[in-house]
Length: 130
Image (spheres, rainbow, N blue to C red):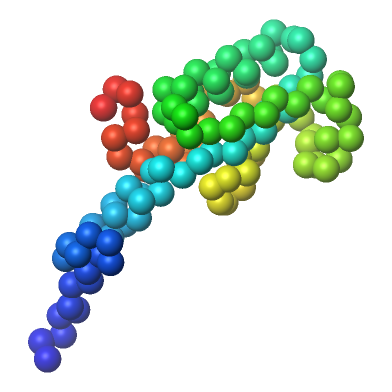
């Protein structure tokens, strides 16, 4: 044996995968159809809450059209939700699915940081400007 690893085959497509980078790209493409489940905690009808809602809705419509569920929770109307999800600041966005669970705090105006926080920067072809 020459010490070379045999190329892996993709079970669905029958293609030969020559490197781990190719394998990772295949995994990313397979996950790109996943549904995102998001919960945004806000504090009533404030400017900061309104900005957070508008920012996450815009991001979801641009990057996840038809592939997300967004629940907006007003902590003034549902204070028990604070304890359940251990919310210490608002606005807070929780990405419940796909795993891993992530928490982002703030008005979500830094789009690049939100994309990283939601694991969207790795998905090829998902960015509207690409």
